[in-house]
Length: 269
Image 1 (cartoon, rainbow, N blue to C red):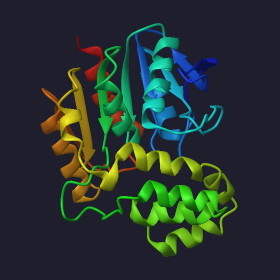
Image 2 (cartoon, rainbow, N blue to C red):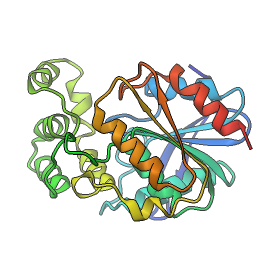
Image 3 (cartoon, rainbow, N blue to C red):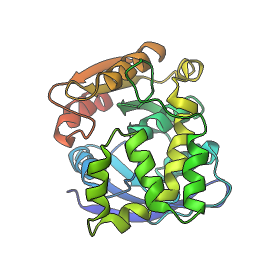
């Protein structure tokens, strides 16, 4: 893991403090997490370590997680402002990498933030084929309602089973594990993920067409076919996007598989 050279906070437009760790030196790269994870998570910590010799890498907690605040009411626009605040803390323009629903957030942000200069994403989980999970259009509201009822574990289970295709039997084992309270602690942010993805995780084709920055879209060949289809669809909608398939990788991608692609993409002018 890379040495953290600075731990700090950026202040978002609504006053929310967004906590970040800074690694390395060089041009700025901001990492955007998906569901359940935050700064220091092994996957993006590995990415930060691998990029740090050439880049200043900002690994931040999205709102509602870790050291970041969580000002109500939630809106996807607030998360875009959070990313803009981290880019500002980096000193100006920055390149961005987002994984899973964090990739979807990064795509939404890139369409609106010219200070994002390059964008790389890993398997944004849009549903574009019939084999993708079928989610209710009020998925975010259902998740939020469960949390408000004090049923945080049920919210996590709903998200895992319906969106992440985790078998109920596996979730039952997770609920018996001593680490389960840590998972429940971020249950309120699962409605945020659903809001970022939009109703039914439908592909936001018009928004993707507004992304003008150089873009790299990646997926693995060892995961569900619907995720590969989603990556192809994103690459097809973002003008000029490059599409890469990483051999042997599933959705839980290894950082050492991402690094060669990210280094090539971020280094080349």
